Image (cartoon, rainbow, N blue to C red; front, side):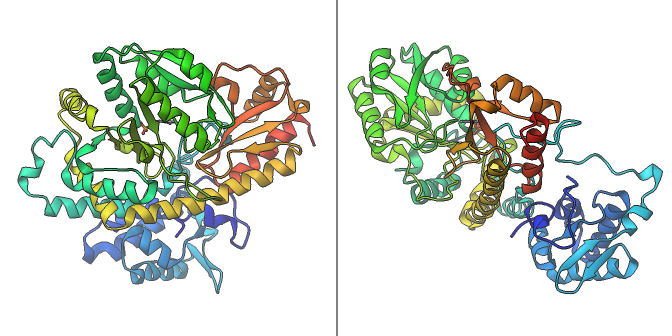
Length: 489
Ligand SMILES: Cc1ncc(COP(=O)(O)O)c(C=O)c1O
């Protein structure tokens, strides 16, 4: 199911403006939480007010009553009733067979003192498309399912569960995650070796402190790679060593020469290049780790999103005693939840758990219980399928727009994740001018060079383009406006 105001708006009739206004379910969610006997009326009032104030703008197609009811966690009858009532009042329009729309009354009904707020999801003022990578579509967060999970755990958890939690995490969540990671990612995951933490960021920090205490001085990071890796490990007192990549993964010779005994890598979908490491390089890395008695920290930051090929299983499955597997809900649900996990070699469990305990006495229990409920009820898998559908559509929109407006562009890393690498021929460069011109028309972009030490001299413009958080319409507009501003058309 697709929440209103996102992907569904592109296929509807009559033509829909990409207003950036809030999706209907988001606007109506507080009303859906009203007590059952007042819920119908609350929904109607909220919908009426949203149209009047412009939070739902004229021309916006509303989701089907079935989809909206599901998003809100209310009965379909309530939504149908609200649609019928507001259609009768002139706020909405219903076209037989093609759905329900916000009508023109939205404009006449809006008063000067009731001006529409700025678009909730729009980037900074004047910005038409922010292609910087790293964020999922936050409007896809399954609010209704999360709210239901929170209600359930609040009513079911015994009082004692509100005491200090086990620093490893709630047993119910560790079991749920262990079986989910083994099923989805091929991770060898025993609940006793799994620690719940605040995202990959805290996992890296915990590991960094433990390695530092064991006498490690540095950690190898991919070049190009995530700037966060270096920053997080540096905060634990470890130096970082850039280790160059080629199209198969980390280059063996510089790794051997580096003298380090720990590396952090993204083998399933390398960040930012988008390559999947070859089987040979995965084996080479594990051989190296054994030979130096070292550790590999696997950051599986977007391992859930695969489009055109069979998922690449986690590296950890090949040697659970050398690989620290890390992941989080930051791409699948929302980074603001700060919920993640690490699966540890037996040799590191006690030290990491003790670090976690002294750092924050354990992760918030209610959030853990809610996530456990979402995973065991099947809601987490449903969310991944829903995001996967939306993100594939957006990736396709990006590929089509680049093909139309920047012919000759080579796009890689398209089979997975939330971003691609677009390598534009030198005639569109130089890169800095390209970025400046795009910024001038409200399009934010990042260059591959910002993520590593390489400075190629071929003049090509290499961009790291995030697309998952943007609607197909915004993607198309952003690419077209950049091309127009550069005068390439
Ligand atoms: C490659 C990579 N790893 C890890 C993180 C941090 O993830 P988390 O939110 O799970 O701490 C990010 C954040 O964008 C990232 O890009």
